[in-house]
Each structure stands twice: as C-alpha cells, then as structure tokens.
Image (cartoon, helix red, strand yellow):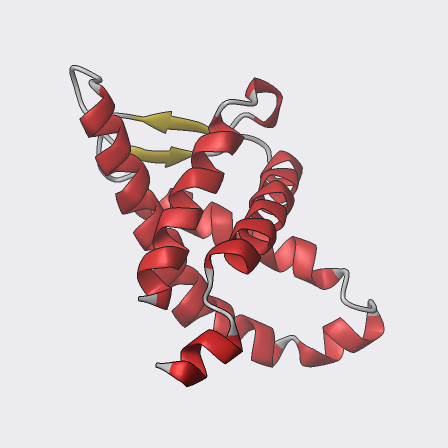
Length: 134
C-alpha cells in the first residue's frame, strides 16, 4: 500500500513540475492526449521514478555517505537530480515519458518533487498508531 501511495504522489509531483515551463521538464502523453492517457503516462513515470529511487537511489545514497558528511547533506540535491535525469533517460526510448532540459533545472525540479513528496507523503501515509491498531 505504501508503494502505491508513493507512485501516486510521485505522479502528482511530476505533473505539478511539468506545469512550470521554466523548469523545462515536460511530459509526452500518448496520442491523442486524452486525460486518461495523460494520467496513465504520469502513473507509469511515477512508477519508474519510484523504482529508480528504490533501487538505484538506495545504492547511490549508501555509496555517497562520505559526501553527505562532507557537504552536510547538500549532495542529496545533486543525487535527486541525477535520479530524475535517470528516469528521463529510461523513458526517452519510448514516445512517452519524462523529458528534462538542463541538469541544474532538473535538480530544481527534483527539489520541488521532493518537497511535494514530503508534504503529501506525510499527509497520506498512515500514522504509526493507526498501523499498530490494525
């Protein structure tokens, strides 16, 4: 259930970021561009982004522990931008998916996605007390 919530929150956050043209992150929906196809595209990109964060992100974050210490955690901005860029690289082989522009704008987009994920994830995840009651 938590992974499904993470995918949905990622899809929503990516959609919000694609509304900001200054960040140069855009979504390529399936033709003819109906809302269901855009929703499906967002959910697939959210799923790929969640998988990249879970698999690749965990390995990169473990390897980069000394850099986290040296930069007081600021390297996480670069790592999150890299993970978003990697998601775009994975999906660029199809006619749909995430397209990114300049790397630093991708880092800013990853920062916005991270903020949205933190806020919505905190609201939508069940509290520890509620999980213990079940």
